[in-house]
Image (cartoon, rainbow, N blue to C red):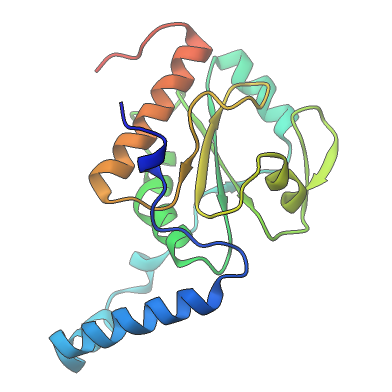
Length: 192
């Protein structure tokens, strides 16, 4: 099993936009230096549909979701994101949205999104109204993306996955967290 320390990777911290801009600028300069203008034109030609990050349901009523999770013995995965976070967009596009649409995970996992900067309201696991921002603070989310798999009472069942990690590892960490959630909710290790 992977250690919790190795889970922290490429993240965005609220208020760290200057460092992000510098990093993106450096990557862009390297990219242009190696591949030239043709690479930029090729990226621009990618259809907009391939770049979408739509598909994750925003958390709105966790008390109702908890009842559903309890009834179906299903863990809840909450992706804490930020609208301006490129790593969040990539995590949703490449991992979380496909997982939410996966036939293999249908009926085994509920995936929701919480925007750590949003003042939108949701009902917490106890049915109390709270903003997305306040809810994020309860779970001490300071970097995004952060993914936490929870039981039907909102208790984390695995270590949070902080940041966007290399593809093989990120998938592994997500699967480990899902497996831990299934064990907690169903009492048995999933096959495979």
